[in-house]
Image 1 (cartoon, rainbow, N blue to C red):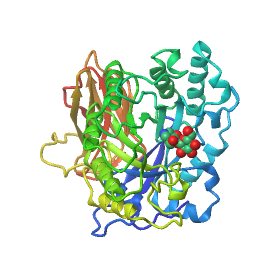
Image 2: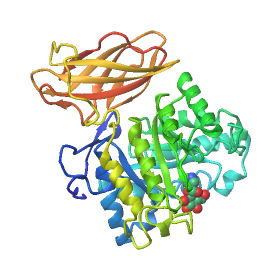
Image 3: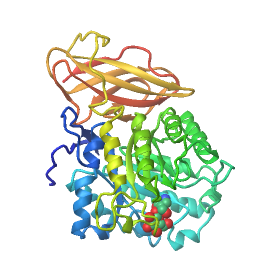
Amino acid sequence: MHIPRKGRFALLSATVAGAVVAASISVIGTAEAATTLGASAAQTGRYFGVATSAFRLTDAPYMSIVNREFTSLVAENDMKWDATEPQQGRFTFTNGDRLVSHAQANGMTVRGHTLLWHAQQPGWAQGLSGTALRTAAINHVTQVATHYRGKIHSWDVVNEAFADGGSGGRRDSNLQRTGNDWIEAAFRAARAADPGAKLCYNDYNTDGINAKSTGIYAMVRDFKARGVPIDCVGLQSHLGTSLDPTYQQNIQRFASLGVDVQITELDVQQGSDQASIFAAVTRACLAVARCTGITVWGLRDSDSWRTGQNPLLFDASGNRKPAYTAVLDALNAGGPATPGSPSSSPPVTGSSPPVTGGCSARVTLDTWNGGYVATVRVTAGPAAVNGWTVGVTVPAGSAVTSTWNAANTGTSGAVSFRNAGYNGQIPAGGYTEFGFQGTGAGPAATPTCAVG
Ligand code: 9MR
């Protein structure tokens, strides 16, 4: 087990309802600024990740930087369709498994990239169409998400399905030609296979409010309205020498739909503004509570797919670049913490309902037309709490579609939420928070809270 460095966040994991869940505990409160990307991001409950490959795991100088700096890994290529199902029905998970094992042994979470994409398909899939392709694609989603069940923080379920240019519509591809509902079919299959993973739609050229990002926005809004399971939007952020002035506004509008936003493949063309663009992206993410993490698309400039553009945070020798310092400083400057992270909540105020038993609960709703996100604060009474259950009345016409930091029994009517493995213990007078998302109108009544 990796020994956490000073200031590095601690990662606790526990098995809840068959799924491994993880929570980051931040270490703010020291006067000292954190000195790594991961520890700095953890101060506001966020992760900072890097794209890498299994073949790098034996490169000691490279891995010493990865292990020092990052709290999340994503496979740059090892979990794509051509890598995991090179022949139909024959799955190879060796390289992806090695990355997952390394992450787990070093207290890092894993992003899964990617279940379905028009590119990097195995030859056999490229040759399929219609029902045969749809069936094969959904089987791929099911098999891969099942194999990694409980080990993936967030899956890029579908990658790059929207067209560039002004149409705001879907990209033509063999998958798209199986019917417009292929994306929602993939999300439903992924949810069934791994209910604990956050399910993301991921794309590029979405780094501001434009026709493409607006097309995706409309899809996410529609999915939320119809109860299609989607939890996050990945903004790849392969950037040039300027940043769209609506970058943050774009993050915010997705967050306001009730999904998390993740910056998933950040790299910035080297130029006079590289450091300031990296910093501006970091600040924009930190300014939005539901922007929960940043991943850079490679470690050193020499590792990047953008040959000759030197778009990363470390030079070819592994030295920190000015862009690194700019990101670190921006992370240490802080911002609103992510929902559910222990550092996210303001101090307990007198507005909590009186604690009649061992605990009390109150709900804050973030609503939109057709749905809501509920944040529930559970406050301990004068005695410490060891295990809690919150009861919520979800009105007719509303249903819970996903839950975080707790496990629910039931989805409508009388719904109970049991603590996760890592947040059952609340000190006397302290609190923790969990959340859930639902369709329709949210609960109106004050929830019940029971201890034990
Ligand atoms: O960085 C990846 C590179 O090694 C591969 O050759 C390439 C194949 O298409 O994919 C690159 O990663 C892409 C990612 O999977 C999706 N968004 C764009 C990334 C850069 O092309």
